[in-house]
Length: 81
Image (cartoon, rainbow, N blue to C red):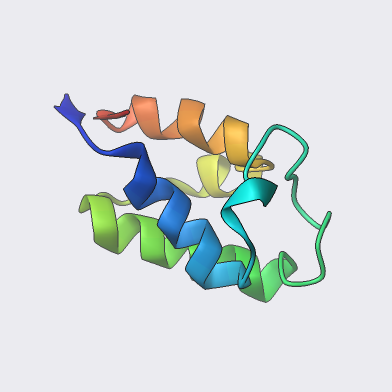
């Protein structure tokens, strides 16, 4: 397991969706903002995989339904904040 800075995770959301840091909370869920559509979702996943040097399984990509769920999914891949 590798500890990472949570700000790296946050920055991926900010850059992928052009949102403010204040938006990053448990209410940020898939399709809750226009930018987090299916294309935005795959852009975010690709950014996460590249940043943390992991490959996320298809089931986890589908289940990556919110900002907070994403943190839990990343733990499965040894990414801890």
